[in-house]
Amino acid sequence: MPAVHLSFRAMSTEVGITVVDGDEGSLHWAQERVAELERRWSRFLPDSEINLLNRAGGEPVEVSHDTVVAVRAACAAWVHTEGCFDPTVHDSLLRLGYDDSIDVVRDARREPVQPMVGAPGCAGVVYDEAAGVVQFPAGVHFDLGGIGKGLAADVTASGLIERGASGALVNIGGDVRVIGKPANGIVWRVDIEDPRTERTLITVDLLDGGVATSTTLRRRWRLAERAVHHIVVPSDGAPTESPVVGASVVAGTAAWADALSKVPFVAPDRIDLLAPSSAVVMRSDGSTSLIGPADRFGPIAA
Image (cartoon, rainbow, N blue to C red; front, side, top):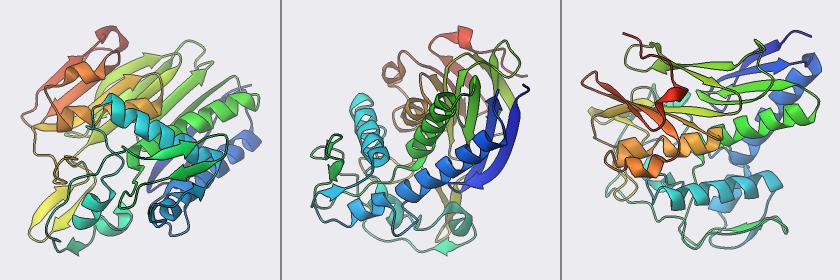
């Protein structure tokens, strides 16, 4: 049976699904699964479980298994990256004017809110997977952001295999998870786009794993008279100002790749935090460098 494909919009971005040995029913399930995760994890939906936790004022909240897993993954990434990835930048983003979906914010002009605030971090966050309960400390608010897209790609791809597909590729806004039999029968080939040129920069060949790209060049809006972006330094809440404008990471899962992709922006010298993954780092001066095992990548486009 040939591979089947579906494209749609969810989580404020484009979503692409490829299923090997699947059918229209499997594509419909995948679309509904992504929509379900968006309803649970989006900070832009008032009744999402993340927003219920954000409004709980330090009290424990009973949530779905999906949300416990998401909180656990975000906290683990915060620990591993020594805070370079931080899901508690929620309040920093609000003060920068990122208070609605990027489709709305991109076309608006926001006024700054002073003072800026750093992220409180994940210390004190409690989650009980067996009981389905999560508790944020008072004053701690989550924005799952990119790691939510990556985790949604992971969960959906694994779910397609559990439902009988031989292979699957799920791409949610550049957070890609591949698993199982490739569509071409040989390898999953993932093109990484250079946000500086919007052309393919490099290609990754995978059998099972995740790829995620973060950039400061796309999710941008006006704050008073200046342009700002959504990748912030957790310690002070300000948008990153390093020369890094794009980073793509290859890791075991899309969620892990997305979390690690924030490291080059926040701490360009801490490449040790990326091990054992691989990364492509793009800078404003036009330079590009590879970090980690380079055999995962094809040649960099001229």
